[in-house]
Length: 556
Image 1 (cartoon, helix red, strand yellow):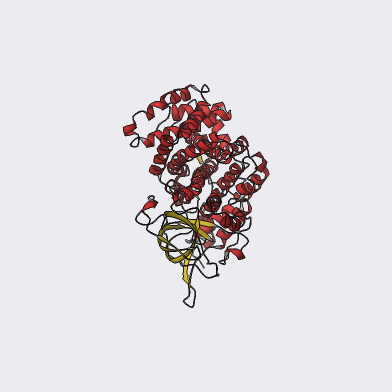
Image 2 (cartoon, rainbow, N blue to C red; image 1 turned 90 degrees about the vertical axis):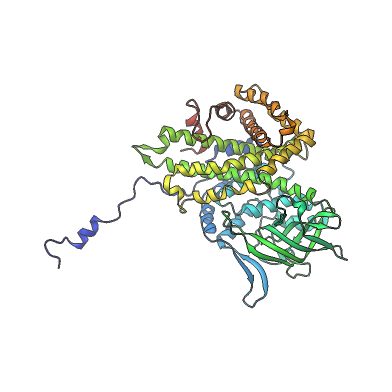
């Protein structure tokens, strides 16, 4: 029994109970990623995919609810390499958490792999499919890698009609089948890529993996790959040296007799981000492969795949920026500081509006390029524009993702650095797309190569930019100064980053101006082209349409 000087235990404990949590947002859950994204909806309609509206709305609700939760789980449980079974037999399998398989199931059901090809006769098919990837990647970016490569492999495979006839129906399937069995037994398949080696990296012509032609017309591959993405894919497109030079091969996980192919996984990469997905190093020990295209034409074949995966890099970075912005807006609309909501504080409003403007410009250019890819087979201007604008956009949008996510992370304060929020995952993921499918320097050199050796690409670029002349004074001044960037040929490679950066900003401005929202376009032109902006986000001029930008970014 307590003495008179001692308080009752219950009274004492009540004094030290954990306080009720106030002035903290609840986690963002169960919102529709499509319905809350004005810029996305407008761009999808503008670029010709209005027919996909209901499909995207349905996927947007799923991605902002159950898939977002699955994304957390999949990234908390990294894939594991199982080299051998319990009895010592080599199996080379990668074990994924069930959450990853659910994400893949929905990605294929909504067409991240095959929507564009199943709707190839409809205008805007690539726009609709890019919107699917943009939505789904916000829930989890790890599924983007196998889905992107599966989608992008179709044009390459068509260089071997017999292979395409067999594989394409499985690759554009809406059914995800994770079983480790031969392709013929599966309802749906995925495909990966093996291009780079230790000694070469982006210089794939330095590859040493050999492909030896066999009496039956197949090839035996001997060598290695330093990056072999998504090792549990049912097949990979691989570059190897044949007698006729560097060639492209389809290397399936199983040989025609049903046995495991001689592709041995040496280890999984321990990556900065992209934790839900697996990348690996492999050795080919006489692996079965089938030639795609002609010997010596491997780069030409696989570059068709790379053109589409580069568009997906743009889409992925735009997606990550969008989700970072959503998290920042959700937090600042519910957190008070100095008696006012963060979103109402003047300097925070500048930051949020600036991020919203950057995000809108990113998705606007991404879907414009998707339309060019879509229309390219029917329109020479669009084909030439896709050729150069993909590399321009891939360079710039992917470069912007890292500082963008960091700025959005800062809007949350200390909690933005904590794993329980999505921000650290987004920050780790942000650098990937600027590296994957060719780093920034590779993109810039590719732009110079296209403009110098393919005159139609320069004509298409200038025509696209000229279409917005007369709509904004800052834009017109920037357009007039553009030719001077190309004058000193001797220093052009050294200056190529500033050339490509300027071209990217001009393309973004052109799309926004032609979209017809004059306030948004004028703010972009003045801040990005008219020098009314600093080097950091949050440096818009006082007359920028801040309220409009924030409301468009995510209606309150």
